[in-house]
Length: 440
Image (cartoon, rainbow, N blue to C red; front, side, top):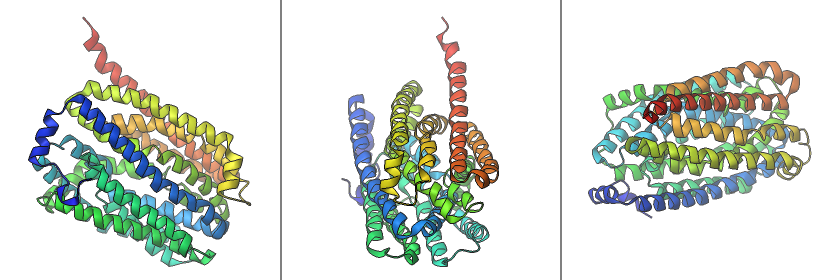
């Protein structure tokens, strides 16, 4: 493992990368993938174990309130991040052999994040107060904001884009596990619901502090420059709009449902959704490794990049299908084990949400591995905005009548819109670009 002081490409490392063989590159990708799977699996499993504990200790109402606040935090985090987890990762991957280029990217991104912090924080607080004026404990609101800010400012994108995941993964894993384990020690009564958000926020703050310090030592020339920050904001605005739109049918579902249903009903949807999203997060290590790889290949060898995309479509689509079928078949056992007595109504909800793994896997391939690396952000944005609008329109119509199953149908429909739209666009784009080249 590299120490923080050696993170970032030196002149010798740049030379070594330029002269490396393809077999070495493949070996590094396999090693990074194994490391990402191990770290992510560990950091995911431990928080997932808190689900049955919180479902029982906090009860349906208390846990429903926590789920709503976590949903709001996730959406606020998207606003604070401003899409840099995608654009900055892509830029860093393309410039990983250019030390000066990396310095400019770091300057632009870090300045831009500070510029957006003030406005986004005010908007997030206003939305939370408007959407949930009857919040029972405003400590939950305070820690929710702290969590969103810490995650939104986290510079993990730099380590992902430059292919230096080890230190960042260790930090993320340790802080997440520490926060999850602390839940079992400090959350003992229904009135301790606010501590769930406090512990998550403290873990996120610790990760932000350590990774920011490592970034400063790795790129000391990456100063805060106002002009670079404004340029980064303008260049990333389309991805920012994409992130906010995706949040309308992804992170914000529990919060949206909280406005048209009682808290106990929210837990009937939020519990299964949390389980399914945890399964979907198992695919994240592949994204950590292959999104910067495809971005790098797009700049060097576009044909190889498309080969990677097709392979990932088969692999991720197959894995998502297996996950979805497993959840649908085992839904009664999963609900009984993870959520406990009183959550029987969540079984059909989980079976509907079992359609998300294969659907999201396809959408991820065409979105994260084609649209973002190949500069098709507008197409990606259009598909995601359509899905978000559809979800917003469906929630007040079907949730009051059908409850949690209706919310699940709305979530799946939104993901289908994204996956199908991007798949059609990808096929059309490839046909238009490849057919003329194949003529004699």
